[in-house]
Image 1 (cartoon, rainbow, N blue to C red):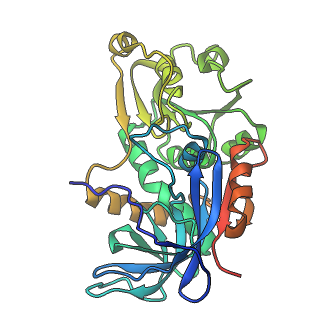
Image 2 (image 1 turned 135 degrees about the vertical axis):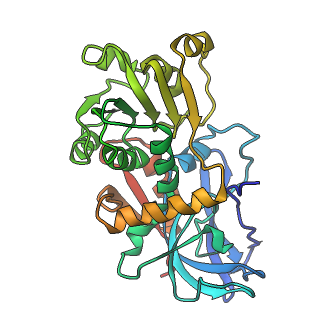
Image 3 (image 1 turned 90 degrees about the vertical axis):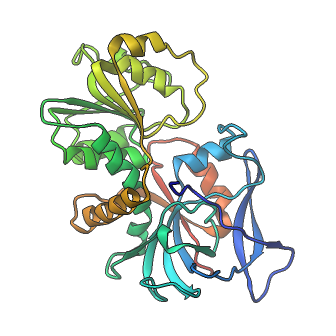
Length: 343
């Protein structure tokens, strides 16, 4: 069975001192606090990562807001999965990955901390000349590249990307490499749309509010809708808008909108339009590794910029401030990075 996101165990303690570390815990919806935990030891077949950078993902924000259902998450919980750091210890029977390697992680959640242990499967070794801060976002690229492949994008197709947050901006950079006829993006903020133009969007549209119907804004220019629709939004309500924006025989690739949908979904419309709807996590472990390799190469080749959208850097001790900042949803706040290195 394909591997899934895991939260490595971490033993909280009531004291500080040698052998302990800082870690962040979401006690309840809207509350994240810094606590102490024991520094974990890698088990047989594991490595320990000294974490340097963790980006705040939209999925972290959803959990912080309480927008995920109980079957997905329960509280208290730990967040953080866009990770870059350095291997500082290897357990028995680990080959290839070694102490001192600079790495990005994938499928590891709960990394707002100084140290975490994981399997080498979750590790991608980075060239040491690549700044670690640019390495943390490589975690999103496997899902994004898979989304692009599922879209079956070609030069005769019109593509719509809904939302230009962190993942949406990376998605725009990747989709542009597939040379669609038109690459249309929407967002609420001018700052993000300006970056999208730089990253290859042929058309950008500013939505007046979060509940605006996309086709009300873009329909004059694209009355038949879009061959490929990729929502890069948080909560699931955006899927209703995505269905309305899809063209006859089109396809929707759900990179986002994986949260709960509270609006009625017209499945007859899906049937009538003959739509295909895809999820984006790779279904085979080998594909996950292949996309990890491809994503890193895109960054090394200068085709995907993972640094330019970083707008704020906050220390782990101030993670509550960082989460509130990311939760405010403003144009001048795009990617908020947590610096997990102890002072």
